[in-house]
Length: 474
Image (tube, rainbow, N blue to C red; front, top):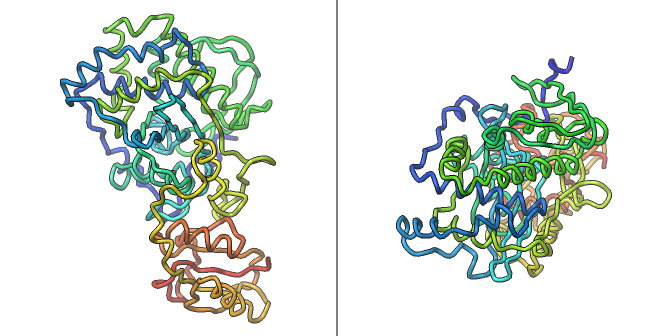
């Protein structure tokens, strides 16, 4: 009966942030005539993923990527002299790698893979930080959503999915994101089919009864232990499964499967000696066209590829933002029943500090889009959702001491709130303001205005306030 259940985890948009799927499907990517540029971007993406899985070698595809005399000559003809990368003067270039389902999947622009890659050109060092798709974050103009919604919302609004996703990641980690590369998972399916399939060893048999199916349903997939020849569709299911049995339901297990597929692609490309076959290269481009995009231009792509090609194994650093006893995140359920991950500390400061330590950056703020906005006064409405008399007034006085202005206090229509609930009324509230409210009330979840009961909207004037707080028993 699994096919009849509704897939809320992967497709849980609030009314405020609902993406018009028909509108998204009508958005067509412009097809560049410079096909070598798109192909080069693809290999940059592969280089980053390969480095994540530590499979560089002296005779690898990535080393071959460094032999770019032809591309360099073409770049000079097209764009003139070589460009330095953004951030290269300060010896730190950051770019975001996004992997999405694509037009053949429900929620085509939701990003299953989000990796911050940071390059130090002077020492040829690369750091890779994997960000979980379920991380609950503030998205400018859309309120709080899972971070994998950012690209989809940006695409629906202004076709700037990569830009909006970069802004969100930059905000929570307090780092500039200079570039982004976005790949449709269809790329890997088409590449594998173009290669005639790949050989994969399945280490553990498993069954996944909750693999996303058509029309927001689930379907069952399974894999048996042992060596298998997988075509593109089978390999894509293998790497995307998130709810497998026998221990295959964790992000770590999923990452291991992704490593296997990427390594198998690399091995097959090297066996076929693809980079010495112009006709084969063009066939790959035809398979990839329309499924890859980036804000890198041709000269920047070549510069980035050359640096990446010289990176040695010992200069690659990888890390995952995770939950669990030793992680910085914890799991929670939103009012709409969606599974999300939130910082244990109540704000993103520890995540930003972890990123800085990983990149060997000073602990103080180096860059922030919200530095000016953070100085603005926070204006709130407080409602008492308990039977404790005077609780709203008392809380208001305490918050006034730390610079939070209360516009109005009152009683909530119901008195059965077990926990304090915060609603963000102003979608333009800065991250610093959000974190200040979270810390003051010791609450990690903040809900968008769209989830506020209509009865409360009718009773109180919400136009001037940044947040509405309903106090609970805790």
